[in-house]
Structures are given as structure tokens and as C-alpha cells.
Image (cartoon, rainbow, N blue to C red; front, side, top):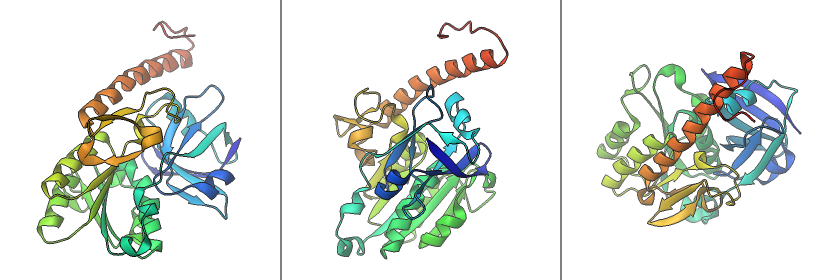
Length: 293
């Protein structure tokens, strides 16, 4: 069992949890993920590591309540425990293996959308601790949906905010802000984008115009996290890759985003049916949807 040490609300339906997981905390690197289950019957939920502290033996995750399983996890309170907390899984961010001298000659641009801000933080923090320059763009629909801005401001060289409604920072999408930064003369060697699939697709299309190498994280496409189930298949450069063991990070300009979004849509249908079953059970009815076991 993995006790919850801390829990706080970051925005509507978005929760931060600090979990005691000594082995994961000692081994985790930026870009990796964990798979979490609320209880023995719970669904396996992949979550990118948002922070880790080997001394405290803690790992931080950020969860958005979208379906039945994420609501069950977010209902847990400090002192209660998660049944499973498997990891660290996947490959660390590519820059972790680069010689420090080469890294210090680069300038990174991170683009974070919504909950994707959480896994961007440990990457920027890792680079900051080693003297590597990194600017960060955080995008959200409104000011109220922004998360981790204070933490990010402490480790980023420059922090830019974009909101769809203009309630904070730049008014418009992150893609517009990226173009504005580059066209006014900001020079970047690498872009890293983490967020909703549709956001990453259009960030990739934008950076392609400027010949800016771009990395995206596709951790949302996983089920078992070991490559056995095949649910996380994605086409990269015309070849089939498995997000959980070959990623979760890939060259954005080679990812078939349309295929990846179709796969996401397939799983969304199952989640909707599961939510309907849960609602029936909560109402005290026997499920009539055809999936009740």
C-alpha cells in the first residue's frame, strides 16, 4: 500500500497528491510515469511523475477527475492509501542522457497545456538545477484553470501564460504565442510540448513551420504499461511504436496524431459506458447497459 502524504486542489477537478513510494522516488527521472490503482479492483491509470523527493521518499502526481477511476483516486484523503503505485516506467527524457556541456549550449522551450503543466515541471526543474536555459509557456482555457505557475516561475528562465479568454497573459492559443515569440527573435533549440493531444498536434504543426525540433509526451494512451496489451500503439515515422516502452516521449513531427486521437476516442466510449454503470449502481439499480459483471 502507498499512503497519501498530502492532497490539495489545484483547480476545479484537478488534484495534487504526494504519495510515499520510496523505490519510485529513488529511481524516477524526468519524463517517466507511474501506473496507479485506487484499490484491487481499480482501473490502471497512467500518470506522468510531477515531482519526486528521494529524501522524503515521496512522489507527486497530479490527477484530473475525468471518469469513474480518476474520481475514485481523487476521493482518497491523506492517511489513506493507493493499492498500487508502479514505476518508474517508460524512458526518461532524452536530454537526461546528454553531456552537460552540450546541454548548457541549448535553449529549451516547454509548452504545457492544462494538466500537462505538472509533468513539465520536473523537466524544467532538472534543467534549471544544471544551469540549462528553459522558457515555459503554460496554456489554459481561463485563469482559474492554470496550475503550478508559482512552482514553474521559480525554475523557468521566463514564464509565459496564454489563456483562451485572455483572463491572464496572452489572449489566445499557445500556438499563437509560440509564433509571436519566435518571430520577435527568441531562439530555441528544442521544444517540448505536453498536454491534450489536440494541443500537441497543433504545436507540432506550428514548430514545423519554424524548423524547431519538438518532443511530445503520449502517456495518456496506456493501459498495462509493459507493452503486453498493445493498447498504446502509435505510429511514429511510419513505424509502430509502443508508448509505454518506447516512449512516452517521441519526435512530434513524426507522430501520426490523427491516428492517436482516434484511438483516444475509442477508449472514451468505454469510459462513458463505465460512468453510466457507476451512476446506476450509486442509484441502487442493477445495471441495464450490458457490461455489468
